[in-house]
Length: 495
Ligand SMILES: [Mn+2]
Image (cartoon, rainbow, N blue to C red; front, top):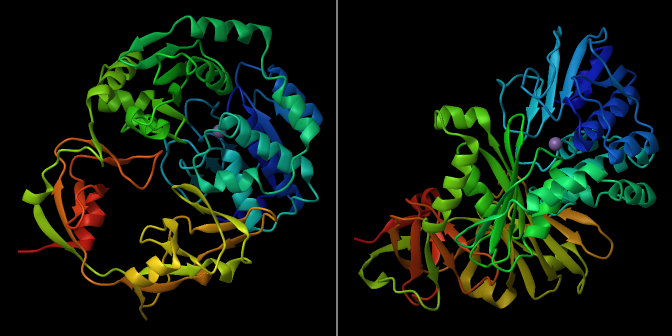
């Protein structure tokens, strides 16, 4: 769907979820200005029993001149658009509307439709709306309040940008200058006196399960949850901690980790698997457990007990495999040969000048390097990208003439760190295949494992039951995990 399709409806009402937060207000406000720029008439509303009273939101409305109205009945309109929520879902008052559209980043709760855009991988609905508006050439420079609102929507939905999940979130966060004085005012009016009490109460609820802190907060703003977990993580005995509270749709989680053995984003994904969604960075992450999904998957389970049992399961769930001291008997495993698969390679100096500091942005995160005639960029089959030395490249790969037009969910972007200039790596990439035979020993995992490789001091590979643990025949300490689907496509057993 193109966002401009919505403007064809002459009279439009944009509805935030009940008790709107900054992300809902920002998404709705940006959409309002976009539709108006195309000549449509639009209003921005919310409903429900509660009113906007949080000090930062009151300042947001005032400083950015956002015409948000509270309504008890739907104003006359040809189209109703719900933002940061889904038409008919539990957190938004349902109005009878002739036609409706949905823009959201939560777990889908309603059927797909031509005017339903839901992208749960994004950290905020602001990211979704920004990306759609940008694609249609909206003039953000002429509307700085719109950009500042979207930035603040992302900022508050990702715990001050610390829990950004998707590269598009990072793209939004650095798209153009934000109004600093406004942001400063909003950042420093987050807490009311009452909320200070909530933080104090949350911290005093701390329990410890093995080396993980578990704390429950009274229902509160997600940022307050992040603030509490930032403090809790400072406790020496907590290798990681989970702070959570009830929300109308289930539980909201904020997660921190201080040890190499737990990546916060992976813990978030584990705790919410099958019943919600979770993600973020290595040290900070967030998640949501859907009450409805929980009731379906585990009938009768109380959300608090469920979360506690997932936290307990996590402690015993993994084999830890360290590359330099594992006792895995690779020599008795089956041998496999890697099939030739075309991957991409680009010269960094074709993209940016020699010596320029650059940042490689992929779905899996950002990597820093420097553009140089000596450094190439490899692009893998899933759109993952990493730097490789020219010599190493020439040793291991050969150019090929297979067509190269991969379709990635997010194509790697290269950012010049001084000028901020961004380029997609794909137009610069040429196809190549690995030279020679790559023989590995591998076997299917029968228990989930975390593998600490020699190539990364911060992250680990997570292997789930059914994935493969492998090492090249030449070096059993170079242990890694290969995803089951990738393994079955790219390796053949040697009889
Ligand atoms: Mn949101």
